[in-house]
Length: 465
Ligand SMILES: [Zn+2]
Image (cartoon, rainbow, N blue to C red):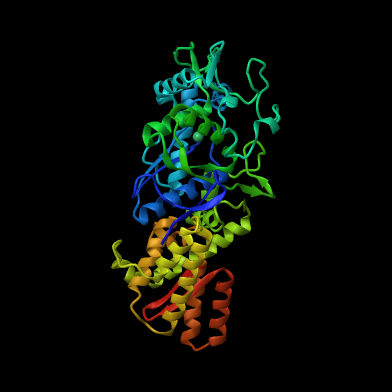
């Protein structure tokens, strides 16, 4: 099997070949911690969580780095709004970020560097760029001179000559080119600042990712990821800084995920059309959210709709219903189980640029097929169940037992247990007295409430579907 990745830099799907055999270094731009994370952020986090899980499952030794931007204009503005320090703002939202990511079963990165803890590395990086002539100092600010980096625009496909300043960059007449960006910003009153050779100040946003990625992954590494909105200027600038400083290709594969849209508009804070992660998990099962987000290819936009989430919920019920049916096989599961056709099929889809959408379809096909086979006769399906659990582990599903999953659903249900129990015993009485019509009516009534019954030798059980 050969993994192929769509590389945003070359705009083609390429065979994945890490710099060092068997090892992968991956850096993903993390959050600027000044507010609650929403479903747009959740998508990027879940996508890269699955990419890392998959790479590990197929045998790569992965070093995953995801930063926290904890000094920035947005944080400073927020600290003024809340009348607390910038540090208090970033700490508050880092804590919230961990709660959100844990609630969605997103694993922590191996290294989670903070910009404010890498000021020395950042200053050294900026000094190197000044020494090499790529950066210049004006009144305590340091700017990167984009015109000197010949490849500027190669990631975003923009040419400096065709770009118009003003829309995305501030017009500042002190700069040599309007697209020159700040590596270091001189201190303003009441802002966090550090000593530097250019006076007190703080780092610009782009430089932290170049300084921290080189520290933890080296001057050249395999994968750099983030949302599509980061391609320009952030990632373009990261390339310019890193390649100018180190004279080596910065990153081999650039991976960018698409947006979550609401009514065809990007979900974002500034548009006010967002659902926070903490509100989403109150409403939907976290694994249903993951299924929803991963049921589209990571590069395509996703339309966020209630209907989509509800469908994902029904699909998750199906998967847990299957697990409940095969719970004897679950007991014998171990990770080193032989690999079967279902897993291979899933990998075939994932090998094609991490196509979780088709991988998840393959999972549902397998479950449907196995349910049908089990209806016909009993046979040992340990191997198939093992494949399905392995896929679940990559997608981030099956973190609870089917028993607890359905129990929680029952608890959450708006219909009270007493009413359901009463209907179930009424139906049992009707069956005892051979009143089949009444028994069927009650079954139908319960089914309208999304409850299914299973008559077993020791009684009837019910569950939500
Ligand atoms: Zn970054």
